[in-house]
Amino acid sequence: MFDRIAMVFKAMVNALLGKVEDPQMMLEQTYQELQSNLIQVRQAVAQAIATEKQLEQQLQKNKDQAATWQNRAAMAVQQNNDDLARQALQRKTQYAQAAQDLEVQLKSQKEATSNLRQRLTELENEVQKAYTKKQVLIARDKAAQATSKANEILSKSSASGALSTFERMETKVAEKEAKAAAYAELSGDSLEKKFKNFEGQADIELELMALKGNMGKDAGATLITQNHSEDAVLLEVKDEDEIRS
Image (tube, rainbow, N blue to C red; front, side):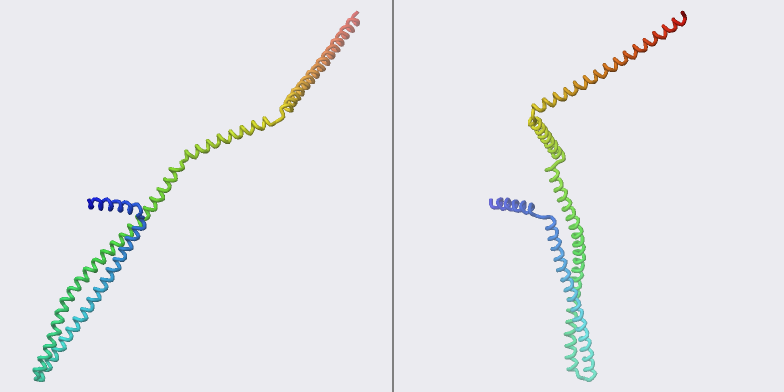
């Protein structure tokens, strides 16, 4: 039972962590850890190389000392000093043995240094790949965030919704304008409006009468002109008859 509770609790913790994890922050943190490991491996390789060089130097010193005591033993033999020659040979043997041990240790150290160098190269490649991937993922994450934000804004304020709001506001404005016009019409003096209408009609009647009067005068003048013409014609006929008779 406790195992099941532990599993449920672990799942809940992982879910919470998944919600609060920031991809950019996690990528930077992971990359910094890789960089720290790389620095440590470089330090280890540098130390291995330094140890290798120290072993080489110690090996060479022991070889030189063995050669030196070998020459001293030979000099003692030339001087018929066997006891001194034996001591020199013993010392030479010690240095020779140390040199052999150092050769074994140096060989092992060179193998370790070579392995560390190889691991360092591999880790450097991994860090370089991680850096490139980190940059790509951060760029993708930023793009995803921008797209998500834009979609969220678009979902909250669509163009159709805005147009609908404008149409409703236009209707309300038109209603207000109509009410204002109605109030303006009602607020005027009705009696004054009636007289204005009457005065307008009276002006039209007077203009109509004047027009009719002008037309009557023109007709009378035309009739008089016609009568004078007819009289003149009759006179002319009468004169011709008298001349003939």
